[in-house]
Image (cartoon, rainbow, N blue to C red; front, side):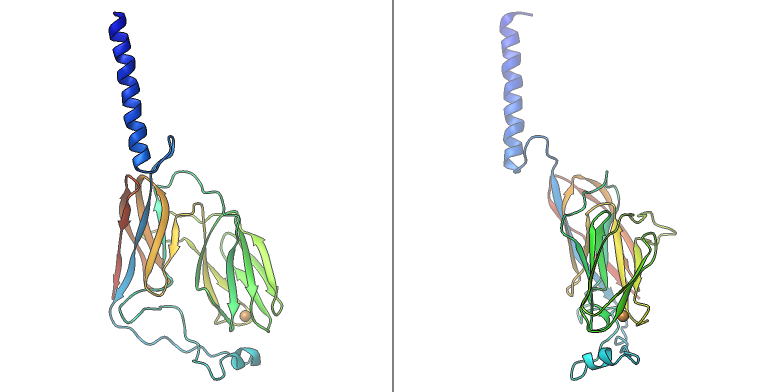
Length: 254
Ligand SMILES: [Cu+2]
């Protein structure tokens, strides 16, 4: 090979490198960093809805008095807005995630307030700390079932902290999700919540508007799943590419 053509080759390679760098700069990415996108969308329900059942607070005076002069507490089993937006649905990447996520330094929180679990559905990363707040002036206990079995009583106003280590199995069984563990209070049998201990951080719980958002999803092909205690499981294939935002909706009906 002649000297001139070698120089030409080196120049061409350098030029190609510059083009790649420029493209990465345009997408705001540094060399070696994969593109990451956002999955967003809505969970909805259409069909006949019965008004949520009133919860009877048993013979605990504190629990009963808590609602004096307030609206009666109602079941959170199926919370749907007049526009059909589903609250307390858990949306997560069920398949396709490579590796595990480092647990966040800040703890996940579950609060007992008004003799109910204030948050019906909570997601956390395996290895993350979980803080359980008893926000009431009565005794509760925190009873977690499933792989991370735990049962402890919480005196009035007490906070308990604990590391939760074992991730849930994300594989579906007969099309149904088993991502959730039940949370109870054995003193007040109507108190119920659900906890998902995830191997990764790609999950979201829908708010009153039925919306979810999962950020920083690396480029790739995934199965996105929704779990709802009453409505069941649905899945959709999604492809994240070039760090773009993608909208995915789940529509349950009866
Ligand atoms: Cu309780």
